[in-house]
Length: 211
Image (tube, rainbow, N blue to C red; front, top):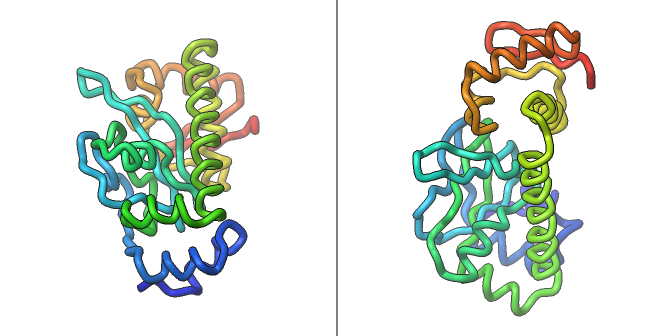
């Protein structure tokens, strides 16, 4: 059973009935950075509702390279996992903790029942679909219309917004994996950004100046 104090942050989203149902039916889990929360091909039994931390949602190509679709923050749920649950299909995405993350795991049977019986839960699910869809469109636009240096700087500034800090602890390899490119390309473009005095580079650290 999940404490009502933990669920209080969702009181603006859900009515008392749903908060009480989540408290009784859901499970609270904590994941370390880089832990896989949902994997590709996995049969989904729970829908994640994020309490604390960030979750990267990724797709994988036939060669095993990953592409970042969007990042979940506190109060978010993953629309891709919702779709798979509603369709009773296996997961088509991988969800990875981007830092230490606490998640409410809601059993899918309850999710379906609440969707049909509770207005606040149904509104939350539909709004989540719309938000994640808009974010995926933004990802597509970024891939299609932005140069790699622009994509890189947008990625860094998005990270700043998520973390609330202009100092990012991240490796060039991690950035390359998220942007679906090579570490060599990322390192070269970061050096260019540093020469432009938009960032400063340290060991596995990037300080954002032009934000």
